[in-house]
Length: 320
Image (tube, rainbow, N blue to C red; front, side, top):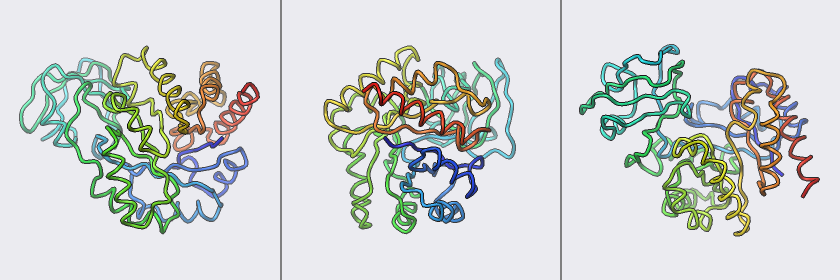
């Protein structure tokens, strides 16, 4: 199996990265929604010096995100806030696509808004579920799929540097069908990077509706449960995850499982019983790789989290 962590402030030192490798980590994910490859030359040099085999970059693609905030902003349930002009920075396509009554999730639905009024430049929203807003967190209009490009200009600039920095896998977000994968593969071929593996992230209903063609076109799939869980009632997510897993196994296609595998370990030294059972079941369902995100990027116990991930997965492999 492959075990991936996500690089961030919590693990961005040579010593911590070596301890993660010693714990069983085989590759690192870099989320390019928080900064381009060129901005992280120090991290990339460190990754190469430690000798981590796999480097995965997670493109921006059609993913929507909150803009940059000067400081984290707390908002309370019942408050009214503005998105767009003179309000919180969001992509213009969000303002032009959302209508009164639509719900907007932020940070994998940790924060939930409802649109009260909409104009061409601003949305007035009521806070249904409050919390603290942080820069560059994921954003989605539930049930609405704005027309966004497969690859952004920033994505293309990152692909220009992918070979130089030893990228081995690309996580393609919000894949909607085989045409999205073909567009990325063409961009890779144009740069002489046909060896790089494409991991198609299944994150919305469009991806589910075109799952068979995505399985055929991608090198691997990634069951990305954060935004995927936003696209349906949360109690439906386990069944959908297992269905994707079954169809990947039947087609002989590798898949990665990600999002909140050990979420509690961002702040606790020991995972919940439910979390280790989740990992165990994911391996039994056929996952070829498992990925930690905030647990290693921003958590208080990055190495311990990787240890629990690897040991639980190896225990599950005994049952195969």
